[in-house]
Length: 350
Image (cartoon, rainbow, N blue to C red; front, top):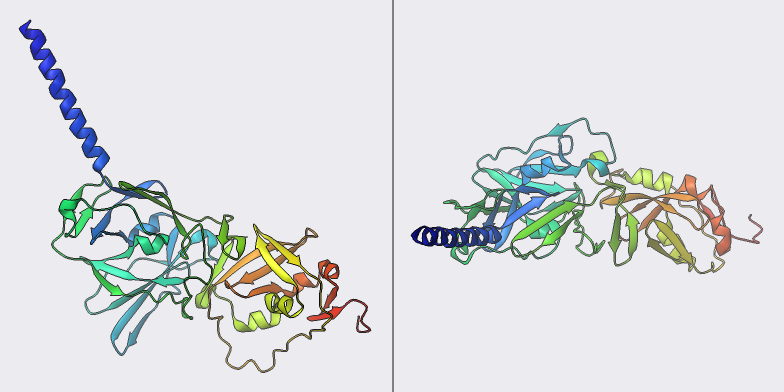
């Protein structure tokens, strides 16, 4: 009888231990990228990821584009990270996340756009909410709410003596270009850095990158993610645009033909208003430079089944002249396209 009571008591204690252990497991707060847990820092209810950890998940430091320059306020180091599968040129110069130096400023660019940079104990970090473009449900324990806490891959916390500090604010500049407004693309299924949250709960945050071929959904239509162009190395020069592309969105607007992007298809509506549009020359170009905004390069499908190489900056759509001259789709809308000119069908100029 006594032995039975001892076994019963032992079983009760074991149940309590298991219940406590399960509760502790459930309370663990974890963050993962592409399904692999990563460490992070939590401060003032916000989550920050180490910049170096992104290099394990398809990103690389573009050493050719990353620059260090001296300004009036001191030395500034630009760190440019790209996803390998959407980078438009062959990368032969892959670098590392620099170790912080006293008095220097650090600016971070991800997939062509700048975001805020933070530092803690010599390491560079980024704000998860900005990275994924939405608020997170993952919160600190009440006990840790006013502390700076480091969490390992298993969600185990350690209070840090040093606070995290913001060292570069968010300008949303394209690489060596102009700022990109938050609503320029208005992505609905990811952030403007092409990163999304797959799981966003009080105890777990799982994030992943958009992959080449994924459909980017915006308020103005949807299109496939193929290549992203920005900066000196991966950007598009104004001369290339003027000589090899036509601002198709501008032409269609002038002809009273509307367009939309739907899952990689270019849908046209309306019939031309009879205007003749002459091709624009390239004589008075001025200083040749890179296009100031980030561009998405894609191949759009026409109703005829033919394909059109395009560049899209979130507002203007540019189409390759060589492709436009090889399709007769424009005839459905009352026009012939020839050597950069849009001529109404039936005109003596055809």
